[in-house]
Amino acid sequence: MIDSQLGIISNVSLYMGDFTFKEFEAFTEEQKESYLADRGHNLVVDNGLQQIILLMIANNTNSFTLCGVGSGTTTPISTDTALGTSIGTNTINSRYRVGNIAYFNTFFGKNDNNGTWAETGIFTAGSVLLCRRKYDTVFTKDTSKAAVISWTITLTATAD
Image (cartoon, rainbow, N blue to C red; front, side, top):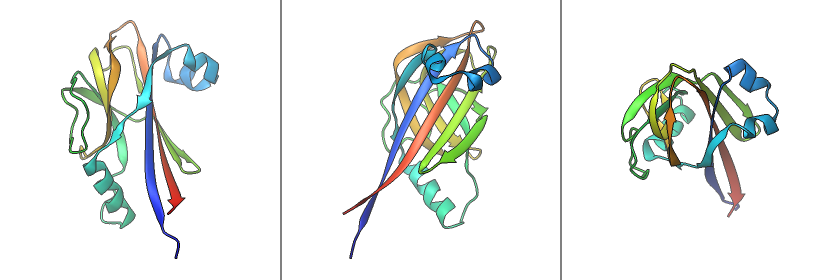
């Protein structure tokens, strides 16, 4: 008998600058990198894992449609159910899958959720948190710049 182990690898990138979402989508990877403010792993939390299971067994249809930002500075832990200090959420602009990777891109216009950004997360419309990241550096989001938060969530299976 062959067993397998399922793994979830989650990364998030924050891009800030003077651009629209349509312009950002048309950028080459090199152009996007010139706007990169932060990139790193984040923590998939217990409630997010439970939501994935509920989706798998058709007990729930609430997919992850919102990206939130906040000013909380606590380190993410598996029992988190929300951001430390929420500033607000925006609807995810594009969600798609390539192979075993899910992509989520959210645009924050110049007037959206301005403040001191120290954290981010992905949520269902019912406020179930999938994952949370505390940025390595605190960022000031103001009316002089837009932002895109890009998540990749990769599912892997390895034989045991």
